[in-house]
Image 1 (cartoon, one colour):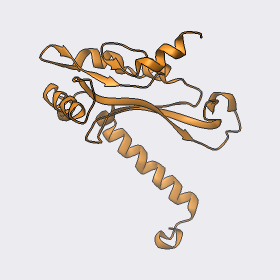
Image 2 (cartoon, one colour; image 1 turned 45 degrees about the vertical axis):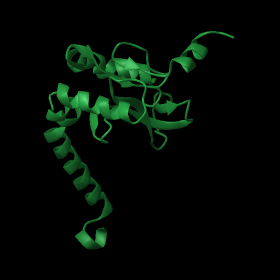
Image 3 (cartoon, one colour; image 1 turned 180 degrees about the vertical axis):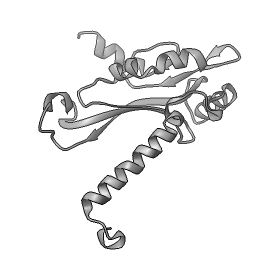
Image 4 (tube, one colour; image 1 turned 60 degrees about the vertical axis):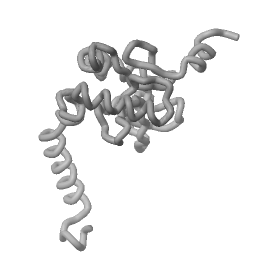
Amino acid sequence: MTRRFGRNPTELCLIFNKVVDIVYDTHQHRLKSSDQLFLSADHLHNYALAVHQHGAPLHNCFGFVDGTVRRIARPKYHQRIMYNGHERVHSMKFQSVVLPNGLIANLSGPYEGKRHDSTMLNESGLLPTLRRVAFYDNEPLCIYDDPAYPLGVHLQGPCHSRMHSSHPK
């Protein structure tokens, strides 16, 4: 790219980072706000129907939430904060809710690599948003999670593995 644009790598990096900042500042609401047309009650209901029609036993599940670990270079300072013991890498984490059509309905982060998924859930503000918007005809809709998340009206997941992980043998 240095030959193509006639700039050195440092300049290209600064330009790229500035463009990313501009895009994020202009469009961050599209990743964080529940006030999107594709998140209306009718759309959420249609997503839940699609999930159910693909074999899910739940009839009200419209999306899927999980934390994602993104590896980073080992930082010079504060290494323990960025270290993810589960993956054994230094990282940043993000939490996203994905809809059956592949769109990201909610994205939060970055979080320190050591953050647990349930901590990210609490810090993201996702639960209050679900309590406000995840309904169709006054019936609650939910998202599906993994055992790292708590169970609730708007959060459903594999009960069997949670029972084994929370009860001593």
